Length: 215
Image (cartoon, rainbow, N blue to C red; front, side, top):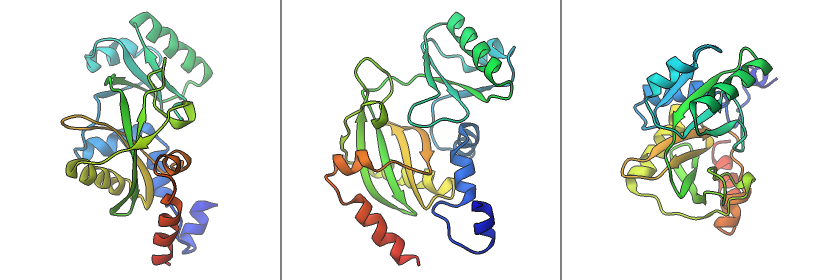
């Protein structure tokens, strides 16, 4: 239906191209690499017997991150501690779906990550999401308690560039801070509850006002 409405001339927030790119972690990775946006080293497992080759190409010490091609709210993201565990997880995933996309990614240890809400070429709101106690994830849906965060000029410009790379209108850009931040993903349906709480309101109102401007 969305593609039909788009072809009929309706404006979708976000468009179907943005949805398709952000919903597929493989495509997001391809876009990041094409646009030279810094991201953790990532390798795609091609098939059930490809784990050893992919692990060697990744060249990272354990623990590492395993991601399924689709998934939100931290679901489908696993911290893997050993080669034996990795093989077992991959076999299980392929048993459930032989066409499953599986990515291996180097693990960047951090106390928090950052979510940036971008409207076109403007940052509307920013929060940092502390890693959940006893976990490695920092999703609000997993229990993280977000706080306000101030971006550097470089973080701001790169967040906007990441949003534009997927043709986003309203998106959430996630990165791990550092001397050169590691960009993780772009969300085409970013949850606003956490950032509303962290900034004590105003984000939804800001976005509604911005949307009125493009009608």
